[in-house]
Length: 468
Ligand code: GLU
Image (tube, rainbow, N blue to C red; front, side, top):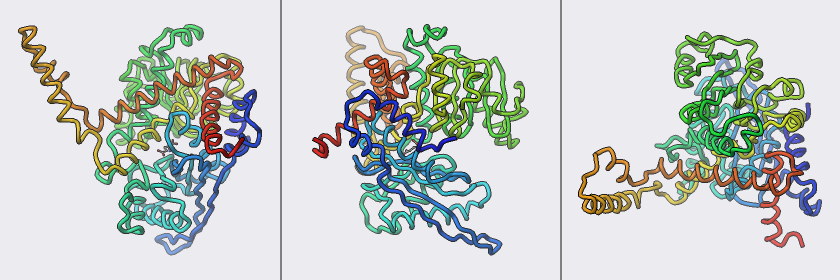
């Protein structure tokens, strides 16, 4: 199987074919601008020394800072980080965020280390980045990814601020932080919530549904989710709240299914107690876990790792819609099969952009040093209360307390973040769908999304006067 970077470039080339950009410009867009690979020694509590390999890749500096998560995973390699960094560049362009793409990785299995060790590793990683100018609010801004969470982001911001005393914008050096440490409300759920908005939008286009034998709308659609990490859990939760039926959930050690629907919160609680999603009351276990991908369903959400949909299983996938929560879950060979079979693939490069979108809001909050809604919440409420009083005096009727609460509610940070995310996902979906309608030869939404990104990035280079 090819590397992640190669796969991303193949998607890029397919999308660029037929455009009239000079090859030199396309090559400039595709290239990874900076790859920082480093290794540091690490002493385990038993006294043994080991070498830890790590990377930070800044794919494109056409906009600054660069942005992208850090993953902790045992099998990560340089080509994977480059591919994921490139994907971030295109992702940010598609949802109109003023960032270049980046990605970082530490080659460890976090389950093999204590929390204290993970903290030492994370702080050392930040030291190394800072030494080479690979981190900073206007340089390169990390975030969580596979194997990292708010906890690591809190260590990162603390280390950054300790090493750059007095820096006014230090909080903006990393996103995905806990709210008390400068995070923004809604970031944790953002990727999953964004996936739900993407799916709701895809299902709302009647002709795209009926042409695949589905009724329009998310209501009652049977969904299989692979991965119950932060992304998969929240995607499942919001899709269920939006009317979908979660008929199966797959994890590393096996999958569970129930045609009448599963509650992801109850499944997560069961895993917390028992250590596994298996043996969930009122569901049947499925092993091997990969079999869950091939279950009879309407929508499949791969939300774990890359390359899970391949030439091997693609012909057997029964879902009509694939919503990519993970980065790179579909190989180009599987993609060709899905295209031929007429599946609707809502591609990672758009579908999971909710995380980085809300990261952008967090970065703005940190730079502005003020919580969203702080200045206008009360003003809005006063205006709304005036409107309600006018309505009551016109109609001669008093509103119920519930109706009043609905009408008189100044937007707080969570409301503003969620509505900004919703707007972003809706606008971007129609932008890529329209691009496909304009140029049907692109063949699918992924190519349309990549073409949209290429157009925007090319424009910013052409505006700079770099190319005649
Ligand atoms: N790691 C996430 C992604 O792949 C989020 C990146 C960010 O928030 O910067 O999109």
